Image 1: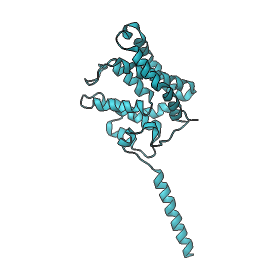
Image 2: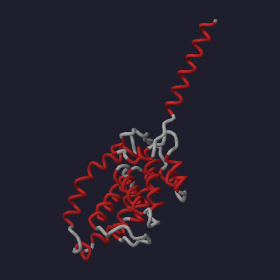
Image 3: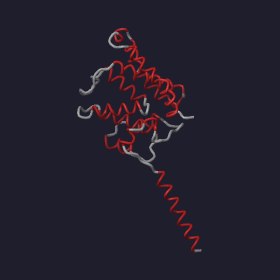
Image 4: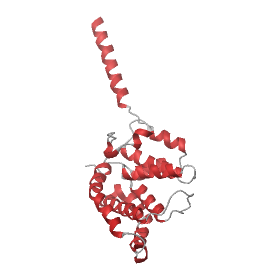
Length: 216
């Protein structure tokens, strides 16, 4: 009887350890350095991107940081959280550089189309109601805008799950794409250099984007 009690106690401890180990949280620094999802954040084929986006929308800095520190955060939640953290910082001249940093992390590491769209508009029109701190860069504007539209098109191909993303791209990126393609704009920057940078990354980003946001 005593031996049985010991086994019960041992098993209870083991189950407790398993339960504790499953509640994984990450620091902001860890989330900022996650190329190719080295943290192994989870993907969900049933993710509701509009709902995830809304969970971060309008939140203050502490609220955003708390949400990013939640247990077992998914890849999509980290992506949209970093995007909104960047948006939060760019409207203050003392934190605009930090804001751009987070938007780039969301775009480059988490392949967030909304962050790409935002960066495209910012690099095209640096004065977009923002304090000083960003210079016009038409090559980067072209790069991020085209990536945003390409990933928006992939989202649309996925049906209902991708409607939020593709709708956002139509509203916020297609007009800018037309402007960048216009003859007047093309005369102001090296189109070949912009297209070379885009082609270098586009194929691998398309493949990774499907894996991250629309897993089989």
